[in-house]
Image 1 (cartoon, rainbow, N blue to C red):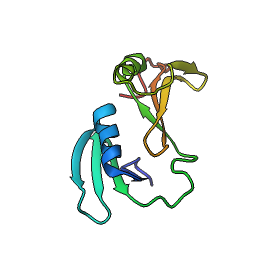
Image 2 (cartoon, one colour; image 1 turned 60 degrees about the horizontal axis):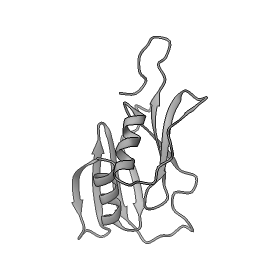
Image 3 (tube, rainbow, N blue to C red; image 1 turned 90 degrees about the vertical axis):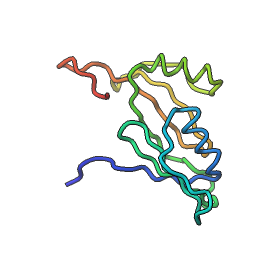
Image 4 (cartoon, rainbow, N blue to C red; image 1 turned 180 degrees about the horizontal axis):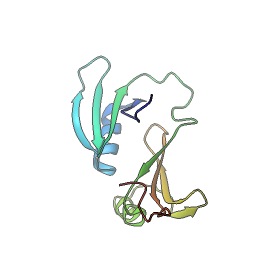
Length: 129
């Protein structure tokens, strides 16, 4: 039985650039990094979400193709303002029929990130923390 998502493992072209993006731009905490490892590797965290970034020579035509991550935020409009203040290229917030209000952007390797605030469900509980 699957208990949930424990870790995302992303191959990146430039580890320092990716760590800067996830840490400085999106606010993930840096748990560990080893630029001298072969391959260079770092672990970042936000809440219960852990991501391991590993620098690999690009083996695909384009990284991120077909991969979209949906990450929950408490207030997508406030998060959008924070990103815009940091001069991040991000879409305007919008509501979608699938039950959330979201913004999206791409990381340095082309992975598409969606940040969503879910609508209240019938029990008036927010689906994401």
